[in-house]
Length: 74
Picture 1 (tube, rainbow, N blue to C red):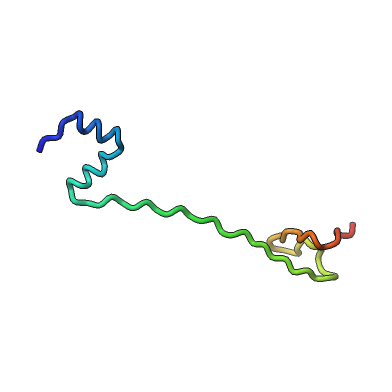
Picture 2: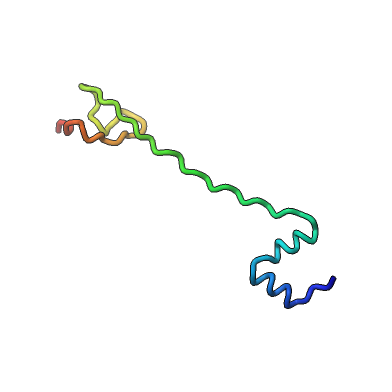
């Protein structure tokens, strides 16, 4: 079976050329990799009277203010 150059141009324009060539060889096209998910945002708040002010931490990630805590003493 001869392939006409016009047929190849049409396959290329449609984006089917690779699929066609793979079908001739009996190979299967590679599966696309799934998109990586972003890690969930950590949202931890435990009110502790007398401890560090809400929204701050001694070390590590800073938690979000909860909105219920009084403003930090200045």
